[in-house]
Image 1: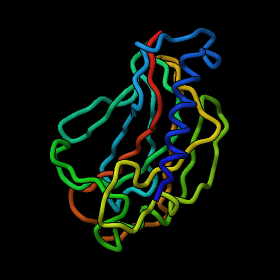
Image 2: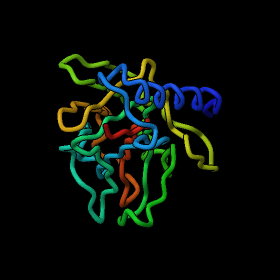
Image 3: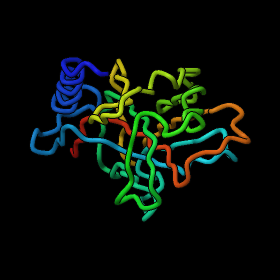
Length: 193
């Protein structure tokens, strides 16, 4: 379970970074900053695929009836303070139920893998254990399955390059819950200069 004081401190820091403009070269007016905000990318979770790529930025896949994707606008700036990984159950994104653990032991194969993140460069932060995103609770709360990122990372609109890769290992032969989706959320402050 997350420490709400740490989350609130990270939110303030993200807001201040945009307001002061140190990371982007100019200040953003407080009326043009949305806080808290998130970006989301989803993919169907199936035992036929063991590696999942999630692209963030203005060119990321858009929302559909099946995928509840939230993208960054071309001119927007996003100060990321956390990453959240959830499993969503339901074919239609309007009635999908999200959890920070699987419904069955097979669904939890997601948490036996590793995660890599690429921040606007060719260098990856690699082999972060997925187990740190799993929470054994029946009571879902807003920040379940979230880990804070320190230091903050800044995504800049149309030139953004942010990729999350989840490698589940060999999951062939697993029987997963039908209509299951992996949902990756970046939490942060969003501003428009």
